[in-house]
Length: 399
Image 1 (cartoon, helix red, strand yellow):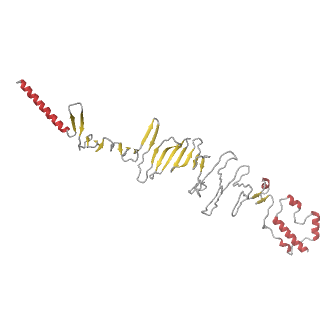
Image 2 (cartoon, rainbow, N blue to C red; image 1 turned 45 degrees about the vertical axis):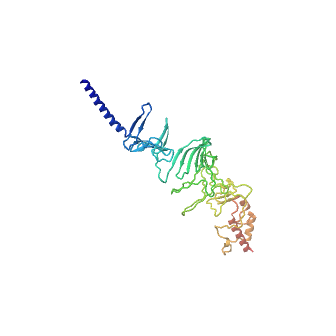
Image 3 (cartoon, rainbow, N blue to C red; image 1 turned 180 degrees about the vertical axis):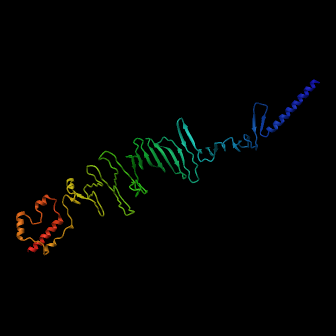
């Protein structure tokens, strides 16, 4: 009796186990089948399913797929993780932050590359449909290694690089525009070999090599300003050298004030100072100063004079040390022209009085003596002409 009861219990337990196993196998067959042939070889088969539970794995007949973040993703190439997942694979590119990248390695947003205390930071920038600019880092072992390249929407680019000498170069459109020498710090614009701190070269016809514009309303502001604070008597503030014009001064008046094409000032110091200095030499007809039009001088004019001549002739507007030739000269007199000789009340000296004066003084009355002429300030042409006319008129009366 006890043996029969034990057998009955074993049968019930076996039936329950078979039922549990059957239910479990029935559910597993929807997604997972275990296949065996009685040997150590076997397989794990994952079937197809349309379940949308995160973590579900299936084989759709072509690829193994896993369901995560609301979508099925391939577990083989190409692979992608969307949503908050940062990494994606799309057509041969690795994209960080976006699955629609134009390059093999694409960062979307701000990122920093850091090694110990050195860091390279590239701020994120969302490009628009009509304006895309990208920066890249390159390296090379040739004569020129671009460091940073900036690419515009039409694939035009500019780049900054270093040559084999360590000089920094700026290229636009593949052409060298600016270089800064490593050894001297000289900057060249349009030239690979600058000879000064700033060396600019250009070959565009009709265009200034350097142009300075000031469009404000303030006064006395220089478009281009050159200053040289070297020791006394050395250096130029601005040095112009040209095949046609060394320095061109031009002004376009806009009002009724005084305007200057070239404005030079000289003040202070105990030596000789020039506001504008022109030097001319050589075998041709060379002029230190040439004015086409009126020439206006507000003070004195000195021609071939010394400082002694200039100091002793402060009362004269024109001082010439040497000969002067003119086709015609007009002297305006401040006194009366000697027609008064013919007035009835004119005191005409008698010939006896004239003879006595000549015997005593050796010259005509009212005419300066030779001694006075030689030791004085020269001959006043206008006054002397007036005296000569007076004597001619007196001689007429004597006759």
